[in-house]
Amino acid sequence: MDFNGSDTIPGPRTQDHLPHTAETAVKIVIVGGFGVGKTTMVGSVSDIRPLTTEETMTQAGIGVDDNYGSETKTATTVAMDFGRISVSDKLVLYLFGTPGQERFWFLWNGLFEGALGAVVLVDTRRLEVSFDVMGRLEERGVPFVVAVNSFPDAPRYPLEELRTALDLPPEIPIMECDVRRRASSKDVLMTLMRFLHSIALSRALA
Image (cartoon, rainbow, N blue to C red; front, side, top):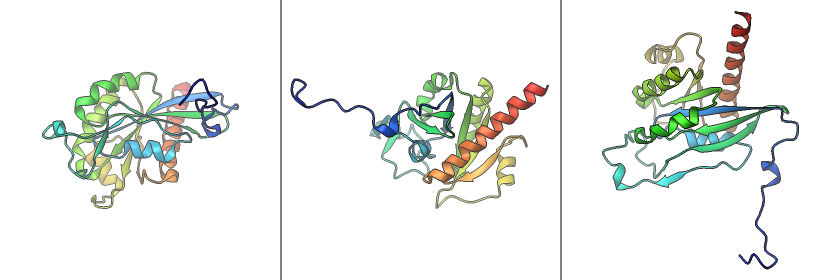
């Protein structure tokens, strides 16, 4: 590109501009194990072109990263995913997807800073990974909902069985979703916002 000529650096797309009516912005983190669908969820629901930090997987991850159920995955998030969605004229959610591989979990602390709530994505083929993920959120006092991503080849269980298996308290919402579908991903986020509202209301009345 010739910066002295007629070519110019392209600016943000019109649809990427923050709505002028926005009054409140909320930071949400999307967490889960490796290959559970965090990048896909951010990409499917974001109003703007999502920022991703995916890198091609290399031989260095063999024997280190648990890719069970994701053997065909060729890229992985190494820092974060970022997107934005306006859930109303006044409310905007900033979405931060965390890296799933345990060796990158040290980055989570920074991503959790200022987060009002979280979505925990779950793969029924690897439920055990979710315990560490939820434990980290509980340690930091970040409220969360659990969304079971519906992989075609993953076993299906009643949600109450999954609640028991994950040792979830009755007040924490759990639902099924398909992160490839915008409507499904948005439903998860709206469930989280209703949950956060109920928490704020109960604290105000206490």
